Image 1 (tube, one colour):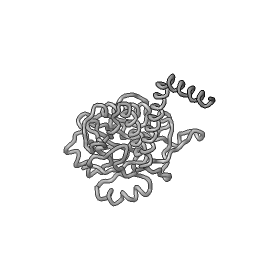
Image 2 (cartoon, helix red, strand yellow):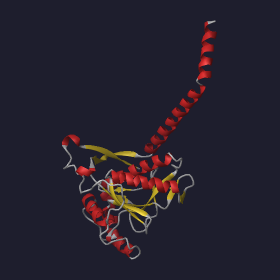
Image 3 (cartoon, one colour):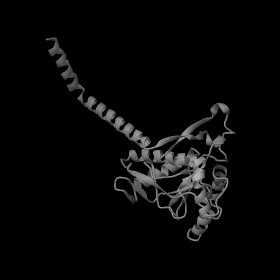
Length: 269
């Protein structure tokens, strides 16, 4: 008799609250799936404990002056200041000299080799090399995560942004200058602290194809604006090349108060 009473109470409870229970289950499943997807991204990466990136309020403690703004109109002069402060101290004149030195630069944690990964893809590079400073590598990871979060809200998170240009030598810059009027002789790309990513095309991981997509273009624009507002980068939207040309903003550990210094290990693919 007691068992039957309990069973009746359970049935009544489920009948009265079935909609609430159904919604709760859906929310729990959504959170579980979202968490699994986020974990999946990072299981395909490994933490490089040898490379630590300083974190700070960059508007106060960056290696070069920067003011927060929600515009992408930073000129080459400002980007060059940050590139020279944050990138390689020795630029390479000839391609073969960089190719001979690239392994050493990676071994010394001065550069990171960029590869296709769950956060972004690299378009065929004809006038540059897929290398960047560790700080830029971390920035690319953060842009990729931010970009995916925005696309997930539109159910479009199967798109990845495309890198179209990275580190250059004087030789590759000279070749490019004959084709692209935006390619100045004082290029920020020479220092490994500058990247170009296209806002015209995106990599579709489901179709394994490069496509145009309105949602992806809008999500990337908002992501870049967010990063600029946070002083994570200085950037310009280039119309002729249909890309965001941006340089990483680094923290200067000599300026950060001792009780505020923090670091994060670089996640690399």
